[in-house]
Image (cartoon, rainbow, N blue to C red):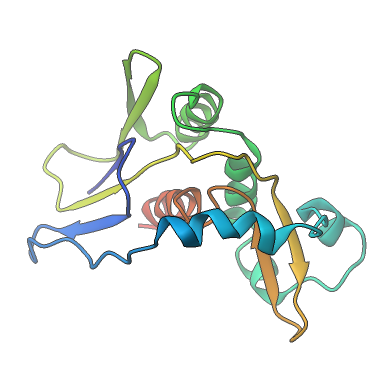
Length: 174
């Protein structure tokens, strides 16, 4: 049984296995790094739909995991700057409901916490993350870099809507 817990304001994804009893290591990012990101991506304008539907070369990873990347793109496309997570929490409630996962919405003032679970309450795995982002909102886009690799941009792509998408798909697969 897996319990997926979304907790706002958490700075990193933590995967805790009851058998290990310890959280995964956390990478640190400085504020300076965060505020230079918009400068790094100014000029990237390709959207996921133009890459997939427009006949452009689609990386094999998109073909291998379309559900993961669609969920990731859908989450990142929804603006959710801290204190304004309603849209993304509404999307996740519907998504989790469609998967027949149990969930509970906890509203604290303007903040939303979603607790999702499958199976019994006797959980051996806990997944935790967050769906709020810091300003400014950066639109979702995807582009090929100069080395032929694929880069995905958008506020929350890594911190932490990408991990939320991966957690949900992993929980579904288990």
